[in-house]
Image (cartoon, rainbow, N blue to C red; front, side, top):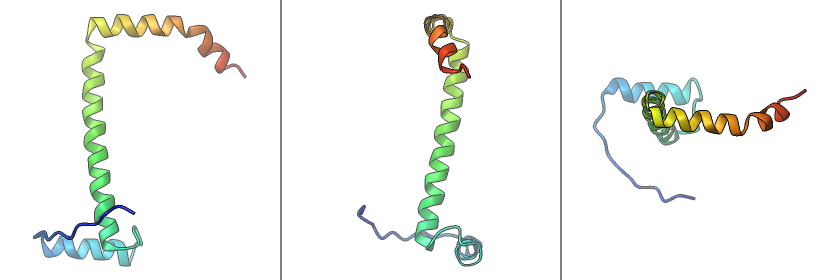
Length: 86
């Protein structure tokens, strides 16, 4: 089990009430601590996904990346067709 660290944060009463409601009423997580960990994890995932989307968008405009991507697609085209045959 990962080590837990006790921290204190100053958050609004509305946020405290929302955490309590999400746990007590909607059972989103087994505890308030678990809900906060889940929320942090989800926010971090969203930030990573947005960053990855930006990188892929930039790569789509990179001529070297496009050449490499097209080369790989051609090299594996036959394997792809075999893998997706019914």
